[in-house]
Length: 316
Length: 273
Image (cartoon, rainbow over all chains, first blue to last red; front, side):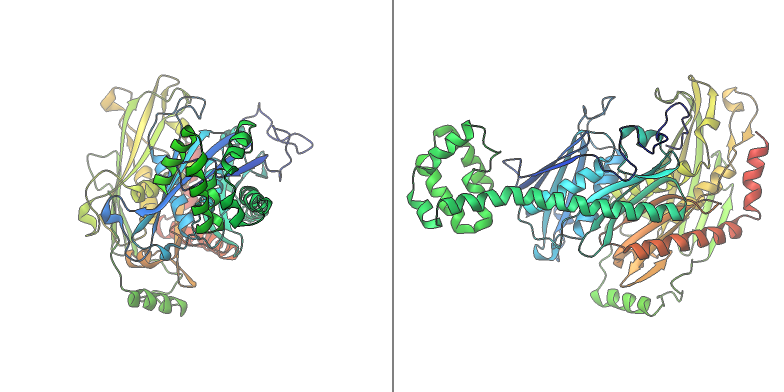
């Protein structure tokens, strides 16, 4: 950053950026909830060329016991970049950058999770960057709160995150790799949409106070768009369940119809949407539903599938 | 090093918040007031540059060490600068020995960003033979007494140490020793939220009970060069804007307090070009 590179024009005369976007335009974002089987909750975010997975475990026992807080849960994020996620292979394991990012993301999440509900526990949030193209901490944090919601952890709100920066002398939204490398400033933020509070704010580069103000406003608006995408991802996962159950008319009839598991097998073969059919995932509808699912599953499911489920039940 | 936060009673917390909401603090300061600050330079003979900063009861020593080395392959025309902050157990009963923890790493990186992004020390200045040999410069911040706000004490110490550093060229047979050129004076200002109030330059106790923290680093022209929000909890947009305005003001005050003529520092560096 801070290098003014004359050869590469980051903004053309029409105000278009290198990748064709307008200054206030986000990259395409795709969010999916519940993509992993073993984790209590998970989410996947594709944000331009960024690919980030989030997994949540907990609330569970705190591992080094002295970290326990008798009054509340702690949220422990681990932001990690895969060795192959960047152009030059990254040496695996935590470096100073990822330790700092893990810290600020943990702190951002602690501001929305109802930590006082789970004293002495930890809520672990694992964030894996599989492919990076600038803005990974924002993508990771966006994925994290969706995964927390997917794990059924009570929260005040979801946290959407987005970066703004300064490129070619202009404030632009959501920098990608080249802009991040050659631009003049980068400022990732995250907000609690309901209260408008900033829970993540970092900046480096050079901006005037006016530009910071303009950037914050731009990022705020973008966060609201991302917030809708987060909610949509959760809806997509859980709305399907409700409809499915409605098809089965009542919860009670679902218990009686023993052919449900085989239907599921068929659906899976047809490449039905993710693991939306996995019966034990019906938890949001209450414990009864889960029990029902367990019963049916145990009776009819083919052996291989049963094995998978067995593992999941052990987790549960 | 992992820091264990002092357990503070709910009563103390409430008291600090109530006081702050009335515009007061336990040590008698008002919200918008730094503690007394003194800086001494050239305190360590073995370092290329050094500074000792006392900010209230906080005390840090910053040392600069330089040695020739190879540039990174992706930036052959730039030197290497590394900032490290050590929270040694002597500094507080709540610091345990061990490798740097997340707190120390965060502080070092925020201080580093302020210096790097402000262009206080352009890495191009550290080149000996382009693509082959450059100066590798270490900024080591040693915390001797920890009473809060290491961000600001560390930044001031690092800038002062850099300003007084002498490149040890003779030792390595690379010509005559010459001073480093400081090209900008970045100053960071750290705020914490105590209840609904925002206070500058927090003590350790205030940091401990604070709901959230914000550090803003500014340059001579009043541009923003680095920011970092920390601790759970949030700031409203308006609060952030207020902090930015204040940080510019505090930056000016601290610069004129610690430098006779801040503009001259930069001009001098420019002229020798």
